[in-house]
Length: 164
Image (cartoon, rainbow, N blue to C red; front, side):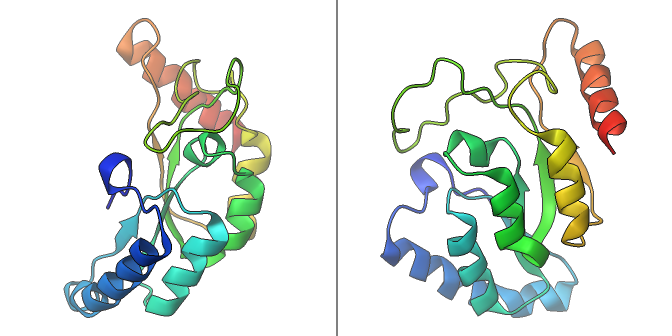
């Protein structure tokens, strides 16, 4: 469930509303044996607090290694804070080159402007950190297309595999 752009969680009231609604959804997710994952702009400690309040293994975080960097967060610190709340992972690239000042709400600069593996995402540290917190799920490539789409996807997959 994405919380970006107009759905960005921007204040304490929105955080409280999110927690309340996730607690309402948790029993249905458990009964259906599905996992609902939030992709968000909260800091890791804020998201972990909300997810801990839900107390359901069927509600978690869809964590994106580049989005957090676009928001100014350290991906390794985010992993450490979210820990077992991470239920899915997006992989894409971020580059901070040319980005000056604070990010505007609803704006996520530096995402997928260079091919995966050629930017600032510390993939060789992110993947072991995910393993350290017990993440064993899928990593979904959400990369840009650079040149031929199939070749670009193949190259991104090779970068991911070479870092596993």
